[in-house]
Length: 177
Image (cartoon, rainbow, N blue to C red; front, side, top):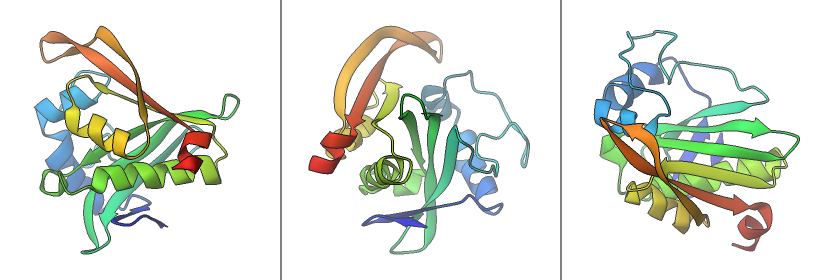
């Protein structure tokens, strides 16, 4: 398990999947705003579940987020789009509703950066989020990310176009923090 101050990141367990599916995947509005594809229903245990148990690959490392104080599942996090040539990757974080607003996302981002930069030897990590996702933007900035751009009307979200914020952090910036 990778440990931060508040969270631990571990491999996904089968017991995590129904909780993540119910509290994250089935929340149509949140999932539609977080995903790059239209929301679609998925049956419990389905291969369509974004949160199904998967082994890490050279391109993706999925984790379950556990609150260390209570040893309770708090969310999901993924380092995805890992590019060994350019030494870059993207981050995705989703916290269960009852764990939002507790600083866990910021700590999760820090632990993912430690993994990406220290273990994988990456140079750059990036986050893309809907431009009005202020909690994620603030969490990323607290973790050392810099808001680099807003792509105007770059995504179709629940019947309207929305901007996409791009935040990034380089290994030297992370090490300095």
